[in-house]
Length: 341
Length: 222
Image (cartoon, rainbow over all chains, first blue to last red; front, side, top):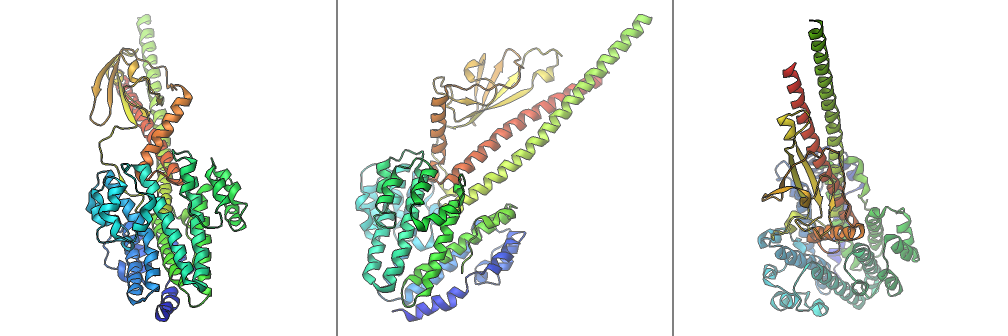
């Protein structure tokens, strides 16, 4: 059952997550070099120590991400089935993002090597560079993606339409929808605490994506039907909440829909009318709360998912703090930092 | 002799009045320039933070310079440079050559039917002559009259203009994806405000240089 790995995640890895005291110190830094100095005392230290000044915020994020990738690879190489498949599922979201990045960048006539440098390391696969030769989704699938784990998710996307910005966005969200549904099904086959906890976490992810798709598509060319097709077929909002979200024309209508669901009432209660920009942070706070609760039960795989997601949140925190320090906007640093544990 | 002295005194008085006027204009322009620089700094700071906020929620790979569109495409926003060569009351060559910048936001070039929103100045079709377009999208115009009636804004049919502007705004952001969060749109608005401030600063600077030139001319005469 992966006892060694669970012990690693609960014991060593979890204790190395940055604490509130660490964040308070980082928020008081005057420059990115100060941040590097404070991080040198953490497990990020070895990854940043050789970076020359002047530092850039993207460098801090890249190096911290490398640490996450090393931890993930260590877990993956030690894992046996079905944990290894579970761990691979966690990376498919990044794989989808990388595919879309390469395709979008190619559409904009960018150099493939430049695009590959920007890809998330957790989502890399062997033939990713070949994506640049495809001009429509059918070719994308036939030439490259048929041999990747994303192949089963393409059945709803395959068309001969040329790739443009809207089609690519629809492809991204359709792939992600299929991935979430597949991951949910896989977790249900595992049963036990894994199924129970992952069902809650993935349902939250599906609902959050539905809200984001709705808000981001307001005022765009995306039709109501197309919007509805991008929502996952599970989650608390499925199916009646999705029907209502599909016809929303502004953010206040979205609020009206979401406030009917008690778990999301508290999220929208934190966001005043006209302050929709704080909604992302409210969702992150709720997500972190649920991820931390995953550690309360024993002997299940959801701790691995929770750990990876908490690390990603930690990297987002570091990114935001670095940006506020670099732009001399420290008064805004607490807008988007989410404390963990 | 008394008449000559009175004329001299009157002339000196006029010169002092003109000098005072030039100094006041210069100081007013400087004050406006400093205010505009402050508001530009503020809107740019806000824009950069909002962009960082959008990157925080969308992810670094979804908002980066790597996604900029390198395909050749026309500019959605251009700057018009108007150089007035008309007769000015003071018959001053420097003053007559005062350049004036105006921003054409989200408007297509050379298409009279396509609605655009003009922040200041004239549309290209109203100019008496057109001297061509520079490679960076500037249109150099020469006008016959010195239209110094102050700043005016010309708004074409409102609804069509709004739709066109909204579409062009979305198109500009589409390099980051077709479904972008409100934070990115807000950042776009802040940078748009900054662009307007930059044009106003350029015009104010032009006024400062003109006032300085006028002051130097008055000094030389006196």
